[in-house]
Each structure stands twice: as structure tokens, then as C-alpha cells.
Image (cartoon, rainbow, N blue to C red; front, side, top):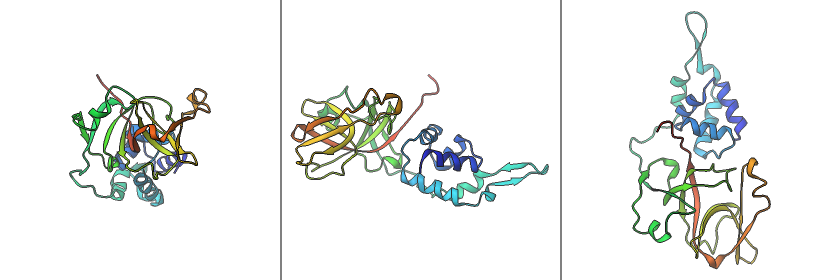
Length: 230
């Protein structure tokens, strides 16, 4: 489902971005991100498709003056699957930039998290931290919180051309679209910048020897937050 389709569904249902956000259990900023081309989790795609198939007539009625009255909240809420009162997801979040500001030994051993994320979208993540930078801003906005899963035995196999984070022997860290050369000896790291930064990262590919990588992390989920007050 693309950004234009989401806008179309929302407008047909006569919903504001805030109303749609409330109905599918996300923030308004997340809806804005979806409508600007951000990645949409499969669970939200299913819910939006279900809402789109529902007869539009169910979402409106008329008041005593024969004026249309939006009653989306009462009808659409029945489409949302019941959630458990208490989330079983407890992903440690570290308020540091993935690219720097911490040592690998601290992150993967005795470092205490700043808090725990219990959003179901972060299920299967081993930890989460900040991602600052614009090299993959076409998919993940600068400053997002990103959830990672540690991948073991990745040297044998991993699905290629997907987003992964790597940590090298000299403690360099980056998140890129990663594939492997035919002989399996080198990883190819490709940026995915948004349009305004495409010239900066044009044709930039970074080859990294497999033996130089100490940790391989799959990107599972991300979230965007906006501070409204100081």
C-alpha cells in the first residue's frame, strides 16, 4: 500500500490524520510519515484495507438538520483487533546514536537501558537506540528510534538487499541496504537517501570484508517522535 492510497482511504472516510491515527493505534506523526512514503507495517496495512472495504455508508449519518454527521469512531473502532491490556514486549531502549557515543561491549553486556519499549511493532527486537543521519532517510527518517535484532550465523545466510546494521572491528557502525558479493567475501553497503539528499549519496557503495564485521543486526522496526513542549 502506497502513500497515495492511504490518503485516498482517509479522505473517503472523511478522517483527519489525527482521527485515523487514533483508530489504528499510532501517532499523528506516524500517519504523516505513512502519507509521505514511510514504511507501513503489515499489521497496519491489513487494518487499512479492512477499513477501505467497509461500506462508506457505515461511517456517516445525518443530524436533525439533515447535515452529515461523522460517526467514524463508533463504527471503525469495531475493526480494530482487541489488544491485551499489558504488552508482553519489553525491548531495552538506549538513548544513544547507533553510529557513536557508546562502546559495543557496554551495549551488549552491562549497560542499563534508559527505558523499555513495549510497542508490539518492536517484537523480536533485542534492543533499540537512535539513528541519526540521512543516508537511509528514504525509508527511516533522521532521528528515529530503531529496533535491531542480533543475527547469528549471518556469514552463512541472510536475506539480501534489506536494511541491516553492522559493527566493524574498529567499532565503526552504520545502517545500510546490504547485499553480498558472489564469492561471499565482501558485503556491499548501499545508501537509501530521500530525494533531497540523493546527490550527496549518489552512487555511493561501500565494500566491507565479511571478516571485518563483528556484529550483524537486522532492522526490525522504527518509530518517530516529535517534542511538543520543553
